[in-house]
Image (cartoon, rainbow, N blue to C red):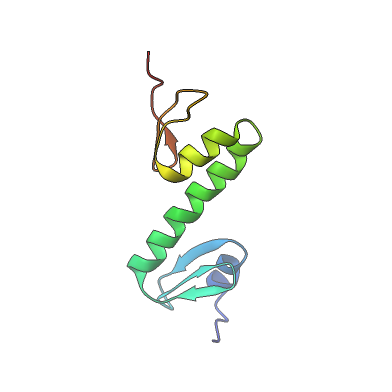
Length: 87
């Protein structure tokens, strides 16, 4: 696949959508369907948050990925975000 547009090259360094070429890049993977691209980026962002949380609490990392509650910290996560801890 040839993508010589500066935006596409920049997107291949991490992720992003190029309106001009109609292609989303997630690393070296090109995705032509915008909905598939958006879902992939959402999952990637959640994974990044979970990976960062793993150094603090491995159970929070799992809860972030699974949209559940950390059994240790009692924090519920949804879509990669912490919700209020239960009282």
